[in-house]
Amino acid sequence: MKSYRETQRNPVRHLPSVIMVGLLHVLVGYALVSGLARKVVEVIKAPLETKIIEEIKKALPDTPPPPPPKLAAPPPPFIPPPEVNIQVPVQAQQAPTITTVTTTKPPPGPPPKAAPPAPPAPPAPVVRKNVRPVGEIVRPVFPRQAIRDGIQSGSIVAHLVIRPDGTVSEVRIIRAKPPRIFDREVIRALSQWRFAPEAVGFIGEVDIDFKLTD
Image (cartoon, rainbow, N blue to C red):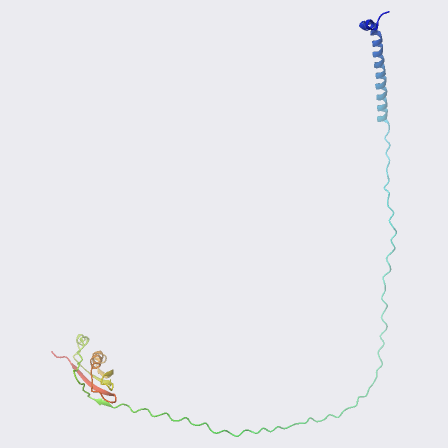
């Protein structure tokens, strides 16, 4: 009797059984594959059934109809009121009362007083003729402008306003011939004149003649 180890060492003895097992697996696999393929084709060829599902409409609740409009009642027919004649007693119209008012004018007042007359103007001072100064007499000089203009003579009448102390406050040219030629020189000279003091001032008159000599 051979041992298990010896039998396993000789593979030739098992070769026919291995081939039989392999063939059996191949046949079974073929049968399975061919059968499944046929079933797949039959499934594809089978007609497709389609069903149309109708939409289920929800039943709307029944709404009551709107109430009929209210009609306004027609106005009652116009019935004119009955005429009533009422007699009103007529009152006698009284004449208006006219009141006369008499106005008395007040007596005239006294006439306005007349304004007092203006005081009389003081008398004009007496002009003294040909007054003579005291002390040194400053004499006017013949103007050079008159010489250039060819004027050789002239005359001046002047009034001197003399203060109480004898000084001259103003020189007034009363008459000049020719005019405005000797005025400035006369005013310059006569303003320096001095007179004897007096209680009241006065006005003196002076005549001055100009003559150009060689």
